[in-house]
Every structure is written in structure tokens, then in C-alpha cells.
Amino acid sequence: MSRVVYALSCCLGLAVCTLLAYGDEVSRLTFAQLVDSIRANLELTQKIQSYNGKEVEIQGFIIPAGPPDLSFFLLSRVSAIGNYCCELPTGQDETVYVFTAKGVKLFYDPLRVYKVRGRFDAGIRHDAAYGVSLFRLHQAQVEEAVGAKVMKSEGNAATAPGR
Amino acid sequence: MSLYSIAWKYIWGRLLASALTALSVALGVSLILATFLLTRGIRASFIVGATDYSLLVGAKSNPTQLVLGTIFRMDVATPNMPYSVYEQLHDDVRVERAVPVALGDAYQGFRYVGTTIDYFAAAPWRRKTFAVAVGRLWDETPPEQPTYEALLGAEVAQRTGLRLGDAFYEGEEMAEYPLTVVGILRPTYSADDRTIFFSLASFWGMNEVARNAAVKPLTTVLVRPKRLSDLPNLHREFNVNPETQAVLPSAVLLTIFNLLSVAEEVLRFVLEAVVLVVLLYLFVALYSAMLERRREIATMRALGARRLTVLLIVLLEACFIALLGGLAGLVGGHGMAALGAHLLSQRGGLALAPFTVSALQPLLLAGVTLLGGCAGLLPAVLAYRTEVAENLAPLS
Image (cartoon, rainbow over all chains, first blue to last red; front, top):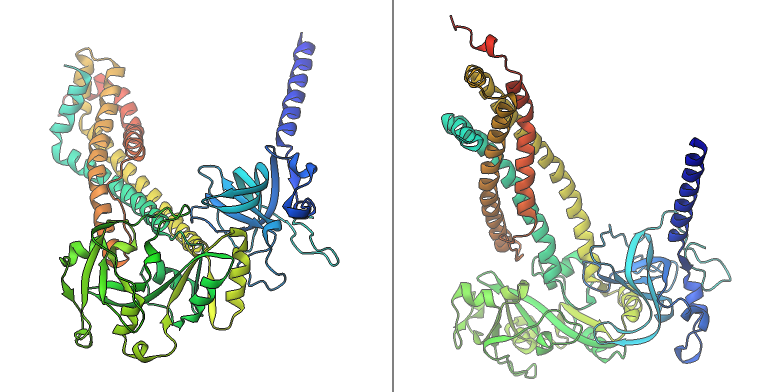
């Protein structure tokens, strides 16, 4: 009897672990992938569009372009406050429009890389309130990316953070 | 007689001691509530009062000073920059709207702001809306033909008593250039309610230096780009320029919030200490009351009261005192918050809502009553364990 209970417990534990591992598995996109996906007339590759509606994670710097409650902000490969000592600011191709989930709280640091996870949405969109955008993340959760690297490696014009 | 009425009679029997205990609870609750309402209110009023423009461009100075001065009219104005900066931004294809702002002196403490009527124009990206309650906006005229027509914020009109057609000025040198009220705005619940607006032509006309200067001065330009992704490039261009700086207002406010959150952390520790002290005081008060009543309790027990009944009476007494203190604390907390909000409105120009009712108040009341019950638990257990024979022995 005890063996049966033991076996059942093991199976249950394994199932929970699998579920947890699967639940935590979110596609990671880099700014390099975003830049590479752009074709003529701001058309996007099928590959990047296949992520539409899916949960993805992107790392970058926060540019508070919206209200100070950070319900909306831009995620960029380059910090906007660092006086651009190392790199020129990015444009449309390396900017993600982030709409955070309600109640998201974070300690804003302009020189810190953040890990932003949300529902991905790619393609040109004209919005009366936010203007034209190419990449968006909806219902996003934000946390600091500990140990992320954002230095651009030599010869690679679009090395993404964390690479 | 029900347990509630016995507990109530116990409180009534030691009215002064019970009132003082409830007062200490009330003070603790007031402090917690007022602190919460004020800290949350300061943050909320900064968010509500924040501009819808994504970028401010001004002369080289402190970014916080530029944001506080331009958006919240809190600090002294930053140095002037040439009007050509506005023209440059106005003509930039990446910019959807650029609005010039010139900060001036004040009338009875209400700041003068020279701008264009674009300042009040609606847009899909604007949360803030302006509406004229009475009168109209000023007529835009060339710099050499100032009209000196003023548009008052709602609070300015209310506090100064100025009405349509009134002419006013402050300071001897302004006597030659009195402003005439042509309109009053509806409340916006932001710093604009405490502002006197007029045209840039009037602004320059009132200023002895600017009147004759070939290069007209300006304090700030509010900028909204067509594409927000152009923001970093615009920010860089005006920051690397040796004469100007570009500031993301939300970034500055978030930095202020970060500083506020450090102060909030400290306050939280202080409030936790206050809660502990109040609970300790409640415990001591109930404990000493229980010691005084050992004979009464023993009599009740001798007359047939069960141990559990005695325990419940002491617990109810503790809960009643905490509840009364909590109720008084809610009133006191809102009063303290209203006082703090008034001071902040007078000195800092922040519009707080000290009487906001949310889930906090019932939660606080329930929490205080529960903690009061916890503080009364040990005295209640001691009452529960009171021996009849021991405590009914003759006093002599």
C-alpha cells in the first residue's frame, strides 16, 4: 500500500514540476531579432509575426514616454537618460511600446535593464493616443533583469541585451 | 443581561481609563490613516497633474527644476532660452505639437504664464481637458501689439475674487501694464488652476528687457512627437546642444517618486512602532483592569458564570475599546489629512483629496478591532483562569 502511495506521490510531483516548467517557458525575443524582422516598407517577416498574441519576454531600458504611473512606456535597447555616452539613440525598429498590466509596480532606474514579459503584437499600427508603432507588448509584467548585458559587441550593429 | 451589555458596562464603569485607552488607539489610527492618505495623495496628485507632453525643452539647468517649475509651478523658473528654439521645434517634421511657455512673476502668489492658445487645445493623446467657464481665451496678436488679456485658473478666480473685466497688477512697475480678465477656466485639478495665463505678446510687453529685445525669451517648450519612438532622438539632439536641455517629465517624476518611497519606508517603520506601542498600552490597560476586577469575576463565577463567558466579556471589552478608538481615529485621520492637504495646497500647489474613501477605511477598522482583541487575549485568559475560592476570600 505504502509503495502505491509513494509511486502516486512521485507521479504527482513530476506532473507539477512539468507543469511549472512548461508554464514558465516564455519565448525570449531580442532587439536584434526585431531589427532583422523588418523588410521594405516596414513589412515584417512571418517568423516574427508568428509570435503575435503569444507571451514573450524582451529585455531593455525603460523610456517613460507616457504618464508617470508607467501604465505605458517605451522599451529600448539604449537608455534615454545616460547622455548617450556610448551609443546613438534607437528608432522605431528598436523600440517596443509597452502597455503594462494593471497594478504593476517597479522602482524606476533609467540605467537599469528590465525584463518585460507580455502579449506580443507586431505590425504597423496607427493609434490616436500613441501614434504609429511597430512592436507592442500588452498586459506586460516588468522586473529588473539581474546581470543582463546590453553592451554592443564590435562588428555587430544590433546585439540585443542579454546576449 | 447579554455579554455585550456587560462588556459595555465594564467600559462605562472605568470611563476615564477606557476613554484614555480608546484615545491612544484613535491617535495611532489617525496617524496611520493620515500618513497613508497624504503619501498616496501626493503621488496621485503628481500623476494627475503631470503633463500629457512627452518632452520639455528648456535652457541648461536642473531637470527637476524645469519640470517642477513648468508643470507644477513649484520652483523658481529656469533661465531663459531664445524663442528660436520653439520655432525650430515647431518646424520639425517629427513634432506633432510644440507649445511655448514663458514663466513670469505672480499676482497674489499665483504664477503668470505666457503661452499660446495651443496650450489649451484638445488632442486624442491628452488626458487633461480645458474648458472656459466664463468669458473667452485671449486674442493672439503680434509681439508689438500686446492686448494684456488674462485667462484665470479656477482657483485664482475663487481666491482673488477677480471677475470678468477686472483689471489688475502687482508691483509699481506693472501699473502701466494692467492685465484685464477676459476668461476663467473650469477646474482642472492641477497647477493650471492656480495660474494666470496670457499671450506671449503680453508677457514680453510687460517685461522691460524683453519689450525691446530682438531675441525674445522663453522658459520652456512642451513637445509631443508624432511618433513616440522619435522621442530618444529629439531628447538627444536638445541635450547635446550646449544651450538647451531636454527632459522627459515622467522620468523626473519617477525619480521624485523613488525618493518619496524611501521616505515612505521610514514612515512605515515609525508607524509600525506606533502600532506596537498602542497595542502594548491597550494590553496594559486591560490587564490592570482585569486585576482590579478579580473579585467581581470570582463573584460572577460563583453565581454560575462559565469560564468561557468571563473570557468573552474581557475580549469584547477589548474589541469595543479598539472599535471606538478606531472610529474616532478614522475621523481624526481624515481631519489630519485635510489639514496636511491644505498646507500642501498652499505651499506646494498639490491638489489632494483627503476625504477619499476606499477599502482602506473598513480594512483599517477591522484590523484595529482584531488587534484590540489580540491585545485583550492574555488578560481574557487570566480572567478565564481566575480561581473563585482564592479571590472570594475575605479582604481582611
